[in-house]
Amino acid sequence: MIGPRGGIAYQDEGPYDRDADGYLWLRAPAKQGCGRPEFGRVHPLRQRRVMRRLLCQVCGGSAEEDERGTLWLLEDHRADWDGWPNGLLTTHPPVCAPCAREAVRSCPNLLGRCVAVRVGTSEVSGIYGVRYLPGSPLTPGVAEYGDPAGRWVLASQLVRSLSDCTIVLDELAGVQARSQ
Image (cartoon, rainbow, N blue to C red; front, side, top):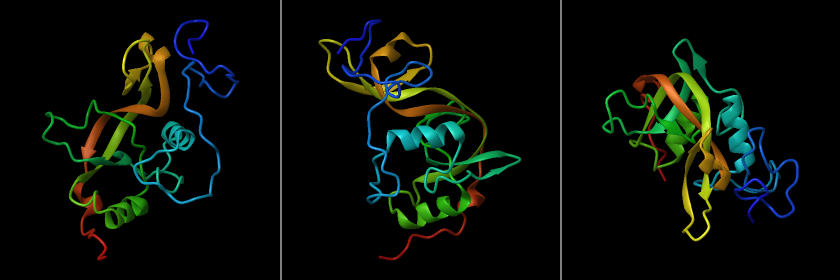
């Protein structure tokens, strides 16, 4: 439904449906420790927590940090622009070193398709979700903070902008896929 100040709203909206910035969030059950991981699907509350606090997206512990910055495991798009991934907007939280190596070892989609990056500076810069506009098809996308279009997005993930990045190929050196 359309809220009193424009944008989308839940009919029975409660105090935990919006974040401190006023964005409406996708509702999801909080059953930590129950069920099995669903790769490719991200729990909105967990993603928001680990992204805001810079925790490991796999184990929820502290992300790996050193003098170069926080460790991120990103899809390898170095050919996209000079200086990649500086300026990248991402919904992927950082990782700790053991989980990064295990993820690459266990997930055949990551091996050879990702790169370890040390990020010196990152800022929460917006939300990712489905944009609802009356009379228009639903479209997923990013709304940066301050963008009035954010009132029409049902947020499911926080977005961080990355800068002061260093690609660190040695972080994943020697990691091989597990044999099936």
